[in-house]
Each structure stands twice: as C-alpha cells, then as structure tokens.
Image (cartoon, one colour):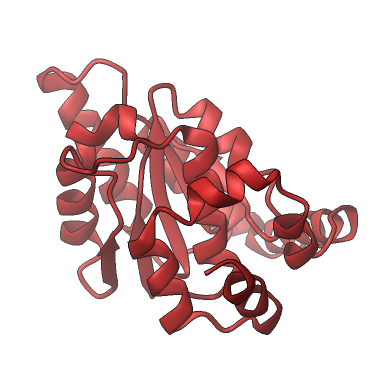
Length: 208
C-alpha cells in the first residue's frame, strides 16, 4: 500500500508527527510525505489540500491519504466532495478502527488543532495505531462482517452513481484554484510519474 501524508499549512508543525506516526504503524507500506512543511513558501488551505489529496487518490498514485486540518471536520467534508474519495473523521482510536473496518475508505482526517498535551499526543498515537492494527475492510463486529461489507459496497456504489467523473470534476474547477494546486509541485510531479488514470494525466498535461 502507498500512503500519502498531507495536511493544511495551518498545521504544518504537526507534519513530522503525522509522518513519523504513520510510518511507525504502517511499517509494511510505503509512506510518502507531501507536507505541508514549515519552510514551504506557498500556504495551502484545507480546501486546496483536499483537491491535491483527491488528485493523488483519483490518479491511483496513492492508495490512502492521512490528512487533517485544525478541526479535522473541514478536510473530511471537502474530501468527500471529490469523486472516488471516501474520507472518515478519526478523532479517536475507536473511530479510526470502525472507519477502517466498516467503511473501508481511502482517506482519514485528523483534528490537528485540538489539545496536544501529553493526553492529546497519547490519543493521536493510539488513533493511528488502531487505524493500521488490521487490514482495512474486514467488517465489524466480526459476527456481522458479511452484512457490513455488503452495506459498504452499496454505499460506494451509491456515491459513484451520484458523482460526475473525476476528470470532469477537476476540469470544472475555478482557474484560480487550478493555478494554486499546480504550485504544489511535489504532488503534481508525483502524480505525473505514478498516475494511472489517463483522463487525469491529460488534464494535468494541459496545465503543466
């Protein structure tokens, strides 16, 4: 599995914590850090980061995104507007585990502006530990796993039917937003090198 770590610029000081913790608990996966870092000249809102994260997922460049913003809620809501993205809000170990096992999504959003005293750091560590404690999508509780998996498949099918194609989505963006996301060159270059979705590659080449 390829996991992308990326979060809003407002929480750049948490980037190392996110990357190091994901790397610790997803040790069998390739974890790629896309920032945002303190030293980056450009600053990115959670809306702009959601579009970049969606591009990484929709292109097939990564399999999972671990992200966040101050509340975690805004990033989750923004990501769930992007075709093909199913993002969960994971403020606790229980939420992380249930989202991974029941909903089997491809993005999680963390509340990075909450209390990060010892208790907050402990909760953060345990949340990511629980997220990666088992392979995603096994269903929960185990006694009802078959029904839960059918419901998850139905949910994803309903979302797909309600959404436009991902290439049409990105083509519909305001030109200012498009220009801004193309300034995040590490993400764009990674998608160019690793993307598997021809329609998105064509769109990127039009603007790159």
